[in-house]
Image 1 (cartoon, rainbow, N blue to C red):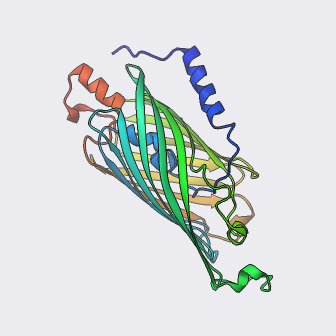
Image 2: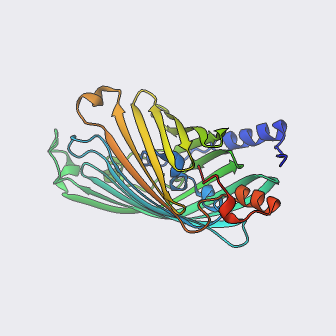
Image 3: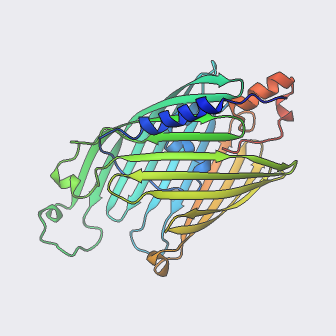
Length: 330
């Protein structure tokens, strides 16, 4: 099949829109949990992704960071991406529990996306999400250098605040670009006590990837994720994964000035994928911990994780679903 491609001028314009939309917002937000297997977990931080799948999928993730350091981060995430029958709309939800020392935050949100066709195999999705976060700070967990501080006289702090985010996701059958802001509504939410515990700043996420077909049994996918948090250094992640015989995934990832990672995954069945990653810190923290572990489970409740460009290709070729030999790679 001859593949139609979006013109370079239009493509450049869309990239410019991505950058402008997410570069001129002067509000505050909170730091989102960190993921190594971000390429399989896009729905967690970009609501525009939820409608890009052709059938429902459920994702569960557990991350244990900086093993052997007391109070180090632990993250649990459960999410779903659900396309609607009209193939233009999608719904999703996320529940994330993030623990760091005496601070526990539980995020939850509902996401909605709407997408348009830019060509026969290129789609642009717009997404929004709304939810909230329950914050709990228990000062009985741990010791502090300045126990006389007024805030430490309170054993616990419990607060709830709303969240509203947005994202864009541009994709075809072998590449994707995305941008998102997890939360716009935090300025003025915290009182003085909570503001001294939780950083109140805005985060931008930019993600992209490409799938190269090296042979019938080997595919190569480089990807990147950039997190920009106001007042902090930019967090840059780059990865290189290989898909072997449409079943086994292996690769490496690098978080600049932070960690090297090894990744592996297996397509257990048409509807189940399991992945694992291990991070080794390259900064000073590497001398005080035994790395970070992350496990992800994905369940595809339909045609093996196709996206909408896969479906369009299958319709054009009049193939049966089982003849699609390229499982969802993002």
